[in-house]
Amino acid sequence: MTITTYALRERTAAHVLTDKAACNGSKPFVLFEDRVLSYEAVDRLSNALASGLASIGVKHGTHVAVLMANAPETVLAYFALGRLGAVAVTVNTAAKGQMLSYFVGQSDSEVLIIDADFANRIAAIRADLPKLRVLVTVGADAGRSPLNGIEQHSFDALMASDAAPPDVRVECFDPFMIIYTSGTTGPSKGVVISHASVLTQAIGIATACDYTHDDVLYTCLPLFHANAWWVSVLPAMFADATVAVSRRFSASRFWDDIRRYNATQFNMLGAMAAFLWNRPPDERDRDHRVRQALVAPTAEFFGAFEQRFGIKLKSLYGLTDGCIATIHRADDPGEKWKSAGRTFDYAEVRIVDDDDRPRGTVGEIVMRGREPWIIALGYYKMPDATVSSRRNLWLHTGDRGYMDEDGYLYFVDRKKDSIRRRGENISSFEVEQIVSRAPGVQEVAAFAVRSEHTEDEVMISVVRAAGADLSEISLIQYCDQNMPYFMVPRFVDFIDALPKNMSEKVEKYKLRADAEARLTEIWDRERAGVVIRR
Image (cartoon, rainbow, N blue to C red; front, top):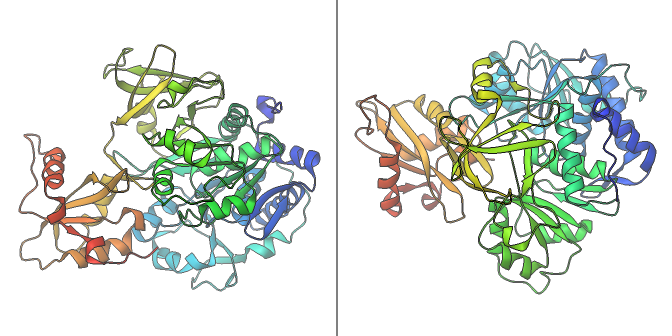
């Protein structure tokens, strides 16, 4: 099947959706539990929602934060905002306290679309958000949130508006989304991404994976992350296929979902694949229609995974700051399975040393676009970070890898000071910033230690303030109130002083080495039975 690529100027979310709705009509586009939304329904309802949002002042360029769990309404919200030329600020549903305040405030969001279950989180930080003027609530309690001095509307009421397409000119280079990075070297950065960037990458995925109108793409990844949107929802649209969306990943429920939706494709993270692999073999392991899956990064068990479940695994490499730059294709030789594939036609990848000279061995992965508007537009209100990340006209990823003689990219590790825990990139800087504000903390260092589930666990070494009576449990309770659940440290170690070099920089490698040597002796919140709220 040939994927319709559209001219560059036509690559806007509204234009493509409307065209696909005209072609596919009543064909299912989005499946979610017992709900089915056709192409025509998604087009019509997102038009209506766009009209409703316009009636409350959302216009071209308005920043609208979206704090919504996986559901069809989330898909409709993104398409509706795209129709208006508004900018969707995707917010991690685990965000609360200081982190949530930062995301909504730093992005200059004037409007917030939120699930009713999350309204209390906004009430707690309302005073920190002077620019927030409108709240749109999804759910039974819509319009009754405990917030004073803010205009409130029901999502359903706005969606009952006139379904005529809004008369707004949206260009392919207009910002479509702001997605926050993990803030690996400082505060989280809001990556500004154009319509053309998102849609061009989706075209590339659909083409490289040979998706067809008969495919059902399954995703259990959160829609506030780039992966689910760019690698599942939009590629399904370009292939005239169907996307099945789950609320969240569940290793015990995964294959039942796959069978329920008759899925033929799925995409997930390497840590999630490890959870599936580690489950006991089941006589129904091959009882499904899946023919291939996108999983990144690769793992040693991939070959055995393919044999056990009867699935062809593919991998890719990309990042929100840049683009999905490489992918495995159907004709790639089997011996290249450990790689992340070869570059897309729209991207260029190079391995360089610290002085940006081409390197023949392991070095930093840098990328740039071969077509206009492919790479993200930059970091919102962070011009210095935008310029420095694009040194010598190459986007510097902070990742290390190498390319073989055939042009296949191999990821090695992360150059940045980040922690990868169960699919989430966590900034040690942000963990430290929040923990340092806890009563009784003088200094703190956050870093990664090994996990029995692959990837990392979060650990903090803490120096108590003089005379402070601070316990591990009270510190974790503070973290639970002020950061997403996945950031909350698992290991806590109280020490007398942080090791530092002559420049007064903390020598985390010493902390990590010491912790790894005695990890079973260090206070562990999972072993202590401390429950973290989601």
